[in-house]
Length: 229
Length: 307
Image (cartoon, rainbow over all chains, first blue to last red; front, side, top):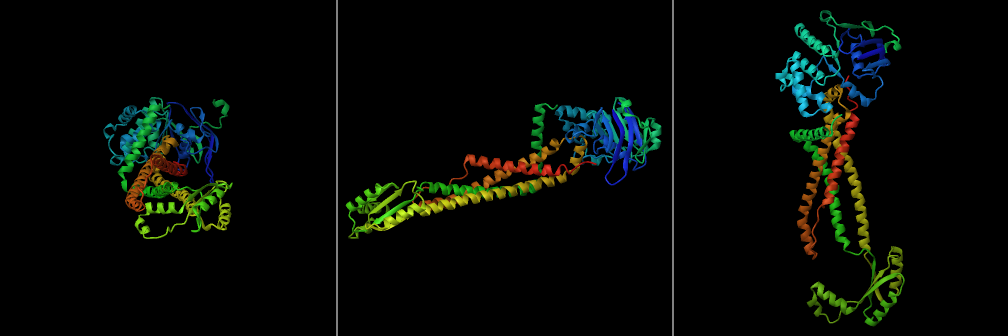
């Protein structure tokens, strides 16, 4: 589902943020991405969301090399990737329903279909009774759930989360992680950047560790590309 | 991917949503619309006035004519002979001879001074021969040569080139028309900039929203759409406002104008913007609204990229 082959990313005027990173995440697989801050976690997630382009190497999503796709194609790639942000990135002048509906509106779904899917998604995260509320009236954990509902509402095959439990207490964090596991069980590839090592070890999934731009655990080391196909 | 009916429904929804947003914050939008309306009303109003002047002057023949006032001693017969000589010239289209008695009769009928004329013993009017040059010779140089030769004839007391002033008026009107075009072009440009600037501010106000929409896979067309419709509404309402301003101004002027026309013994009345003119005004206004927002959107949307 996601494949990185010897991917490097260098920002202008600095050393490599990522260096020769190779790994593979299959459909329905869940993995944690760990490392100190500045180790390259955000850079890796941004590459998958095509917010930045790799300097070297290949980033494949569904066997499509997204390193060189045209600007016009980018929105369609992003529709296959649900992203959950640490700061939620909700629209505070819209209701919970409208926030969650946004990806479906963008895809141009009929009105009735939108209502059905938004409610299913909100039901999944346990916020069906909040659909008419404004995000500002919700707690941090609830806002995070709205963000998750929005990320999964158009059923993307890939789910990315950047420090989704960063501001939550352990119990809430655990609940959120279990929610991610439920998506993984229905075939979604889930990649979660986190430095909550205790929680990660409890969950028992694949762990990808980055250290100063290099993948020190969980990756594929210097694998020749022809063997990967 | 998206069925046409859903696509059209989506457009209608955005169209109405942007209209709703404009109605919800009327003050700031009214300012923009007022600037557009006034800027468009100015050249439109001048155009309407010029058209009215053209209508008045169109009744007058634009060709030059030379009036020869004959000496009182010239008899009708001699005058006829002169008219006949002139008729044979290649550069003259036609010649009209007004005898002294005809001139008197015409004056008596039209001026209302008939009774005053009765008091005079003699007919005070000279005979007049009006010469119309052919179209080929209707230029200043030829006509002036012609005029000079007429002046030397013994029968002629005074030779006068008429309608020269009309030509000047036409030239002034032509100048005015050009001036209106220049004014219209400059004011259209300012309308474009006003809409562009308003849309630019709207884009900046919705920066977060645009970023989020880009993050979750919104295409450029999707993001552009509400701003373009906002531009469309600005254009339409600015156009309607300028139409109202022009119509109101003409209505205000029509009273004094018809009074003036009565004094000139005419039943002339001001005509306002006609149907096709109104459509052109609205169309142009909508075009400017759309173009202004398009420029703003294409310049500023690329600058907003999520990170």
